Length: 434
Image (cartoon, rainbow, N blue to C red; front, side, top):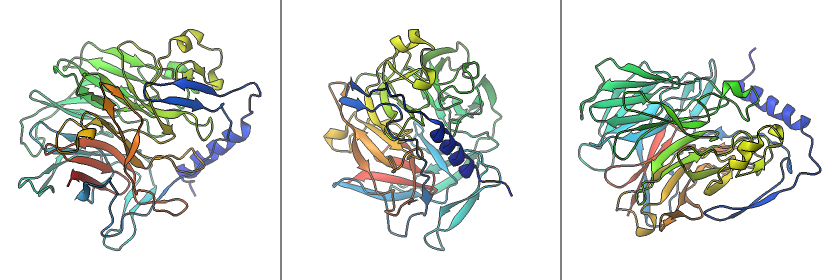
């Protein structure tokens, strides 16, 4: 009988935790981020823990919870791991249905009522689905399988007359005409990307520059903290910059362990990313973060975190890089799996939310108590971020390990509402101002 990958991962984490020895000379650190002061505990101040969630689904009539003045409704259901959402310039909503490949594993997606109960195998759906709301009632009435035959697709982008898809191992470009409901033309590979990697670091996101002359590609690390050798981390833990035809590649910024969400701040056109940080240093290390991204900057991974705070597992290896590590702007909590990112660039939400950032937190596994499993909001004032606050909650079911779902990708729809991908429950939620 083959052991479950979840069991194997838990066993590895337990063995690593047992082998950790607390450095008696290790101390915590006080740092000042753009958003707030932050107290960092010493590495191994608490042991590395493992706590996986059990997805039990959403009962009929139950939804995530938003602040007063907002309404949360189901936008789409019965999707197979809807991981990322992209809204095209014409308002069409594209959904990347893909997940970590776990061959032979069955996972309960929704198991509260017989009607909602479904299961999926560990194999990724590897498709893109198109959703269209033709009568503007806030719910799509047209659903089409837009593109199949992909390899763990994630990032999507419409630029000019082309539709781009970021597979885990390559960037593909297809000829595209606004409004088409199915991709009928063959695409071509314009860029190879490094594949494989630790946990869920298979995602490759896409973002065009404001003038459309460049494309940015996020690539997560292939390991937790470079334990397989840094020679295996070439073009990883970074954001790549290329021309729209795939040429002219350069590493725009590095030392970003797993940057997934990317977006431009509407007021300043500054590039920001949400970064999923490292594991196995304890319950409260290392916080995930939202940060502005500077061209040519290094953000610490794997040698240090939050500036020059050296990772004990890479101690003394690259003092030159530790010294130049840039301090992230906004801490988002340790092990929250902060992955989604969208700036609110519309006007239907109240004033406080405009130009602020929404971040999807997929939720922890390397912590004794759950963190994440929600969407948080980071307000911006005069172009600077403030402290994050809860926005969309209710994903944790209240039992020891039960969760209704897990939010990931967030985006702003053409009508000003916000769409949230709940990949574990196979749904997309719509948040609108009342």
